[in-house]
Length: 156
Length: 338
Image (cartoon, each protein chain N blue to C red):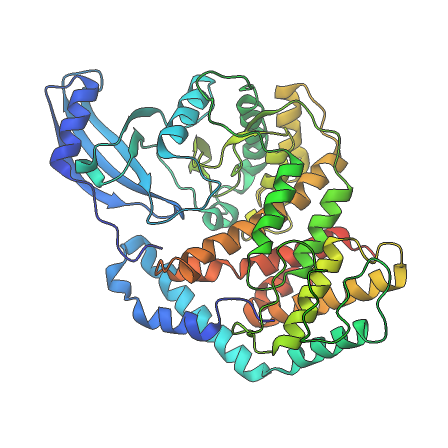
């Protein structure tokens, strides 16, 4: 669920690139980005995968009992659906550095596909629940990546 | 931030400039890789022209392609033609001088333009207290500039390559990108669906700069000296650039100032409406602002792909994909009033 590239890749890249090779006008920004990479990595380490587990659980509960007309059919995470997700939706079985297994990834893809297709637009309670998951996901990612931006927008 | 970029060949460039300008001789005084330019490289330099139509000392910029780009950017020769059209329409923009493709000069196509004075740094512009009093006037001026850009309309025999990209094409391209992205982005999908179901009636197309924002105009003191970076230009809706200018991603240090971090919308709108004679509809602008957030999110992910997929070693590019999540927050704030 975490954004790409993973923070460990950002740290590796920061160590590999020497500020000496950069034009003077870019060096200050480079130093800022290196510090930001370290800060993101520290916040991710401190947070662990608790918020990802929580959102994964919410997705399981959101899709748990039944599917409704218009929603893609994928009742069990990790199972291939055979093409109901819409053109191009991938069901990558790797976590891609996002810290969760295929199940959470699949349900996130399913939510994305359903939102693309307007699957919840005739069921206000489902739409509201889907939006609540979006809020939690986005806020959780920004708490790690850019808490200053959250604060500037009035969020803690 | 490119790890390394080799400067152009001084000798070959001097000969090219002499040929193009009719000078007997051109002497170049060093190169400086200019800051910014995520897709293009910009080399600032000075040159002494002996004779010819640019006789004397000139400050110039050579603009060329970076190591990789993104699909929606124009070719260098195309960007040069757009810049010529804008300059001819009296848009405040660096005067375009010569375009070339001689590989001996910098190994790829390039063009040369006048170097205008000032800074384009968005953070500096939005935090400099010395500029404060003049910022509403600046926003009004930029509104007038935008109206002037929009006097360029299809069909134009000098701009046959420009694509018409209306809302449905934007929506299709966003989805096509997300279809091959390795991560699900449900918040972006939700925003795109909103676009799909809220499209306004299209207006006759005009030239859209498509990156008209704070950070892409030069300011010398309080005076605007040039609108830069025309690589995304194309035909499109007249409200598209308004939405892009007001998109939160381009407000830098002043998120509260909705017109590019410099002023209230009213200042920008006044300049635009006065010069264009067209009254802006807030609902239409809102649509294009939502689209701007989505477009910026997709561009940020594409820029990050230059590191993630194409191996361009740049910390700046690697990081930029994470800004897509800032756009997701803004989409939720714009669209979820529940």
